[in-house]
Amino acid sequence: MRITVLLYGLIGLALAGCSNPTQDPAQLGPTPRLTEIRFDSAFFAMDSLHFESDLAKLVQQYPQFSEDYFNRILMLSPQKESKKILAFYKAYLPIYQATTKIQASKKASPEIASAFKRFHYYFPTYTLPKQFIYFIGPLETYGNVVTKDGLAIGLQLYMGAESSWYYSEQINTIYPTYISRHFAPEYIVVNSVQNILNDYDPLALNGKQLIEQMVEIGKRQYILSRCLPNASDTLLLGYTSNQLKAIEDNKGDIWTFLSSQNRLFSVDPSLTAAILVEAPYNDYFGEDIPGNVGKYIGYTIVKSWMNQQDVKSKNDLNRLLKTPAKTIFDQADIDF
Image 1 (cartoon, one colour):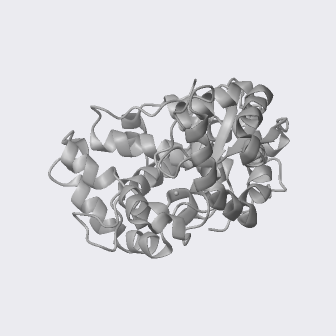
Image 2 (image 1 turned 45 degrees about the horizontal axis):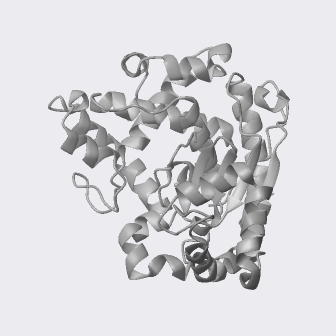
């Protein structure tokens, strides 16, 4: 199973393309053929009175994804643990019913198709998933993964930030509010693009200096913005509007702090964690600034560097990925 796990980290979103093809050449690319699979509906359509036979039929109908779903998501064997799977079925039926009322897939499916079209234009050698599969899994597990069978989307983690399911003592311990506020339908397409990008070019930060880590993260934020050109900065960055405003109001002071005492070139894990790991507030800059403020800094540096490039280079996002972070930092006309 080829799998890329989402690190939660991400309202309104529209994916209408730019009408000027010279400014937005990605719109000229081919539209990928994607098939929507409703494994969630098939699973909860099983009859609890004839569960074993219905379960066998389900596995036969979806052989590839069933292997991923039962063995790696539920971690239960459909041949040996049907009673435990039935218990999950009964426990999660209300969650499935809640997701059908929200109808997150109705908006997400065309948004994914549009974003994937743009991704394919920029990265034509990458084999996009041919289908996206909606499922319901445990609240503690995956919400968005790339598998051999396609892009799998766990709707249990897209019920809306106010969903009561996220506020039980157990789940709130795993996903505190600053994380679960991203569990809204509008994040499906963001998480999907992030996952296929990480599948195409896995993010490796270990051992890198703080500035390198910020720029590497900034590269991916920039690519995300090109695949979702009309998404708000709050959605792309995963910040609240108040957090984004606080960063913008204090970016000069933040940059002065980071660029002093050689901090930009530090490999101290405590410093990089304080600047890059999502948290409700920042240890250095106070409760109005989010923990992962470095994402904004890296994104800003990359945007500045890309704005300095010629038209051809601006559309070569592979070149962006391959350009060393230090080179981008050294060449960017930074104005904080």
